[in-house]
Length: 594
Image 1 (cartoon, rainbow, N blue to C red):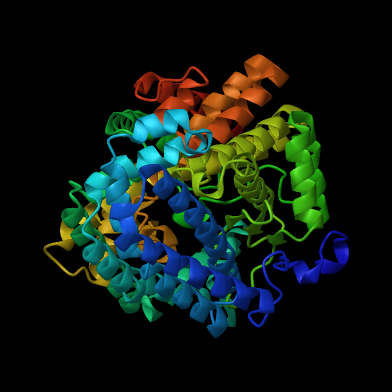
Image 2 (cartoon, one colour):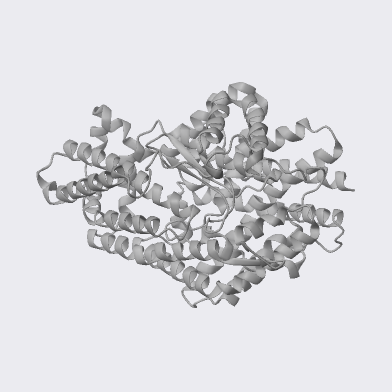
């Protein structure tokens, strides 16, 4: 494919020189030394707190946090990006371990300082009268709010140290297992990511063979993966109890800056519309010759005339043509991403599956990983990840310690890009077959963020509910996944073809610090559809509001961010509006397939 693409450089791999040239780069060593010194400075503050004026402490703490955060993004980011494309790279794994160890050394002193800040009775007065502190108001107020979940300095240090050989190590093991396990597909050994990509192939026998080969590979690693998942979830449960959270879900909502009322409205609306998505699945099954629901291996079967394979340059032109009509800044950023090697395109052995975006604050750029094989769905994936990169651009103007946005809004710009790309393509469709293919592509994605996400939410809930009382075997994990999928997909999917190993191939479950990374996709998808509806009403006037909203996500909770666009997230009716627009597309799809 490379000889067909003028854009591709470095064999389709990303350029990380904006960070470091290699692990032997003198700049890397210098940054490690600087980080070491700054950590020592933080540790020196704690014993001197009694003699430090409050204003001086706040300024000093902010300055040190800015430097340490920027260096951490660079060093850990570089190691993580290298590791993502080569999980056998010992230098990458080594640097990540060193960074975790260094940052763990600061946890005790950092806890002492944060407790001191939270106890300041003049904090609001200092924020109001000091211009610099006013810029960091969200950061400082968040410290005060977080203090009720902080443990003692020794306990925080212990957690940080134990996590290195605990949840973080188990997560790395899972990444290694899934990126290196081989799939025996038609007598050829291929990576798991490549086998999963075949689910989008136009040949039904290829899809079925790939699905069966994929399922056959999991027993090779299922015991290790189950051990990792059990260990991670137990660590999360224990930490939640010690910190005072009622459950991992409550912790996830707190970290998401999202209320339970909003989640209940979202999940309730999704559950109401689940039968409609089963109608879509059964209609697709009938169109493909299946009478009793859709087999899992045909879930991503292309329909209509979009069986074309795209080169990278064709994908680039496709996206630029659509984004250029929406906003010049988005168009220009996407152009840079393709031409300046922000993207690592193709699957290869040792590279993790799926796709992600990683912001690089020091360079005000992003890096995007995909496993591109030329299908239209890969163009949509590129649009999704480049939406994350555009979100990064909107928050880079904040200080580095105020650039993190929460999980639910993290999927807003990415899913908005998806809706923009596919909806525009549907409007431009010239034939019935092309329109069918585009609508079906959009419904495929919607089915993932609604039906599949609902099953993942149910599964993770059941894992946490059971973990205290049992160590769940691979068979038990498969049983819980089957039950969750049945509750979500119902009779839309042929029951004997449900995917029992989705707990193993999805990395979102394997994080000690990020539980329930499932409902944010549904949130982002439906929130983005609400914003897209505003765009269709307001036209170009919407774009400045959209950018301002994205900019606000890192210094606001989700409810107040949505209010900027006149949206009440706690009202179930808002979520039903987005789901109804998908329901209308399902009706159109059913008519087109009759």
